[in-house]
Amino acid sequence: GKHGRNATASAVYSSAERRKDSQQEGYGLVSKRLGVDSLPEIDHCCLTLQPARNPVITPDGFLYDKEAILENIIHQKTTIARALKEYERQKVKAVADAAAASASETQAKIEAFKKQESSITATMGNHFAPKEGPAGQATQKLKVAKERVQTVAGKVEPVLPAFWLPSLTPEAKASDVTKPDTQPRCPMSGRPLKVKDLIAVNFTPADPTGSAKAQPTLSIGGVLAHAGPQERFMCPVTQTVLRKGVQCYVLRPSGRVVTAECVEKIIRPEMRDPISGDVLTERDLIPLNRSGTGFAGSGATLEVTIKTPSMTVS
Image (cartoon, rainbow, N blue to C red):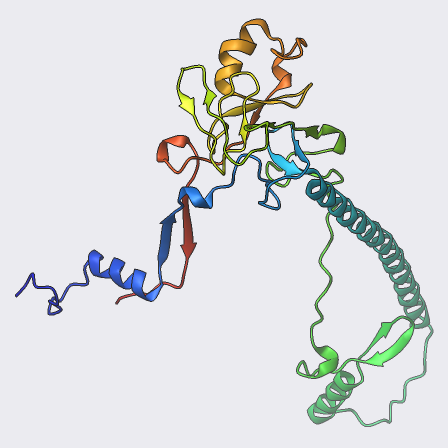
């Protein structure tokens, strides 16, 4: 019938059929929601996507492995030096080309002046020479077209009127190189980044004894949280396990990682490090960029879209 499982007699290509064909054949705009397994852990480097052996954080809150970010900065500096050298070479070439064009223009003016001066001299005409008719004028124009010349680097070369010949094929000119940015930038935020801006991060292990089974940890709310195999770190103040998606802060002076709950309830009222007692400022509280939890309400973009070849139905 009309609503049967294999009803294909409809004259309308419905949106449900389009979605089904798009998923089966792999064309059109394909979207997929990422699961929690696709999100990095709290100690993963933003470049290598692996646990950072020597974690450092930028002032913008992005975590990197020190070796990886230093290699990236060195690579950026090498690329910048190469681009600057090419830019300076282009500037020198532009000055040389401008000087050559000015000299060529001056030489052309001199030659035009000499030609004009030489035409002033009176010459005796031959009144008995036969006058050229239309045929003679056509022959003379063809001869001029064939013998038309141009001056290139002081040499006289014939200009071929045939545009299809290889000698007249258009040449691709090198594109102008713009002045490159001389400041290495953060791969994630795009802001200027220096080596001295990197801050060492000290994660507090969730199981200080190093045994396979982690001990239960007590949070401020009184809820026991057991550290699993992927939950290796905890807040040194509240002893809350730092799970994936938990909002954390890095204290600039010590590099300790604490939870946002600890910052709001313990640190901000007195603006002191609860462990060392150092005075803190707002600049010393660096929010750690979190990846998400797998839930839509975590604030992270968990949907990926791929553009594949589309099909047009006429």
